[in-house]
Image (cartoon, rainbow, N blue to C red):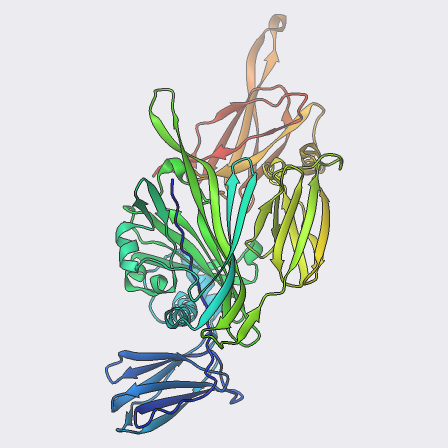
Length: 563
């Protein structure tokens, strides 16, 4: 199967080092100042519109707060200016005579979003197509839209040249990783198909014998076809998104014909600056549907006020064919392919363009061992808290994470053996120095120790065990708050020691925020019936047994919706 890839790039920046002279051409010069301290506003997006409200030209303000519009016909215009965290301002209509230059001063005032209003809307549970003004979700979308609009402008104008490191990682289901990297230079990071094409034909399209996975760029997210076919809702940040506010989006009701996307635009909870986009594919074939298929884009504000995308990736399934017991061919995921990149250098376009940012990076190298510290642990997942960068240990238990800026990092290390019982070792903290390698050694707890600690504080009889696992839907997504019940029969002996009557006993647990449950005090070597329930749906029940020698049983509960 062949794969293609496209990524969402959002880069908010430009620099006008001087105001050129254009003879007798009509010109408009906008000067944008902060409404509180009158300082020039750098990086605001200015629009020149005509008397009918049609946008004629766009420009980003320079370090002196200037935006220049040249080559105009004489006529009447307005200047509209917007920036993240500021209220959008539009001037009164003004005239530009033949051969004249008109100057417009614009002051931007701060604009606050009331989070309480967003939370109230979230409690209502509604997902709104084109949320109307006056709603908190509309305000949140307006902040995201400002960043996307500036991104689209920067991309179209080809203001920068980028030196990037691109990589392709083949992630096998057994967590073994093969990685290939290459360096490239260009004025565009990637391209996307037009929004009309993606909405009409899907975000996954056939290409010969294979399929191509597409992601949205800024133009797609801003387009009328996308906004008319997707609804938005407020999402509170948790985990790595703690302190952020999310603008979640999903296909509107009735859109289930083509492969579409759902996801979240995450914004800073104080400044409302865009931080990252996460998205997944909807309506994939059930045999290859997985929450692992999707993409992630990170955003970073530079000291000079510009914005770049320092990291991005898209993860696609690799598909194999197998035959079921009746001889019918079925598709299944055999591995994942993650393709992405990191920006190492940003330069102004042109032969003499100066360097805007040059990445100076550090490296973390380490080894993950078993609980005794004697054997390497292959397939352990290693990542940085707050980052999308994830690697897996090789057959020697070793891993490398490159391209890190200096600072303190929380390194999250886990493994499927402990993840399946809902345990994640607390992150370790390491200092990274640019240009240097930081070494890490980590011992992974044994699953038996994890289970013992999980039930330490619960009263248990001798000969009792534990049942642990995760509750998921048919797509493998966690179901927080789902209930899990265990029942078994205990017979009471009567005449001649022959069981005549059985009592039904049971225990119950509620899944945590990640869908994990734990039931302690379960009898060993006893036939158990386990059922899961969520949102009015209950499973028929599976039969399991906890062997005496194991002391615990891991069981994944899958709840399929009635719809």
